[in-house]
Image (tube, rainbow, N blue to C red; front, side, top):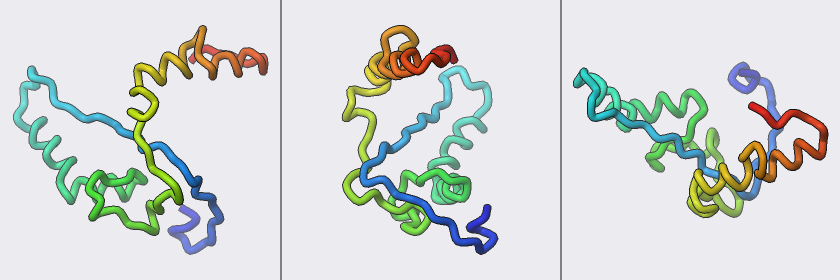
Length: 113
């Protein structure tokens, strides 16, 4: 908001960052054809531009505004590099054995969601 209002905003672009992949789907039992049309819209250029206006990097690289979504200096990588979300959730976020839970426990803070 501050930047849109002309204020200078200082920020840091990390040299490496994770591409957040948020799946979208229509179930087989979806009763309305509109659900499929909505999904098509989300993947369209117009839909991707709306995603970008709300701070999400478009999946179509031609629509990525380098000023709004500067590329990391070294790499933009996907979760698959770490074995996928099931592996990452188990290794980092499991409430009993995950590394984040261990850090929280050492700090004496809650490990529950």
